[in-house]
Image: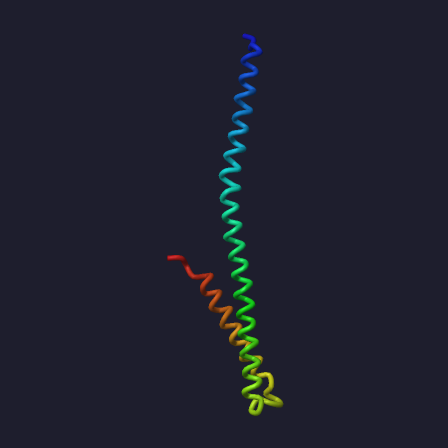
Length: 106
């Protein structure tokens, strides 16, 4: 049984409609969520950078405060002690951040 020209054109239209429908669905289900996910990631990265800079500046402020306030007792061979204090504060900051990231959700 031979197909008529009209059936062949109708089949092509159905296939073209199906392809358009699948492409539109894929765009709707991927590009929309990716846009909101991109915004979420952007705010997360900006927050992480600002928090890191703030933590670094706080550690640096602690080092400078210890150097200026305790320059007499911590002078000479003990001039490294303020740097250890700043490093301890920075490590405490990292520890708190890691425990928050690894904490199981409720």
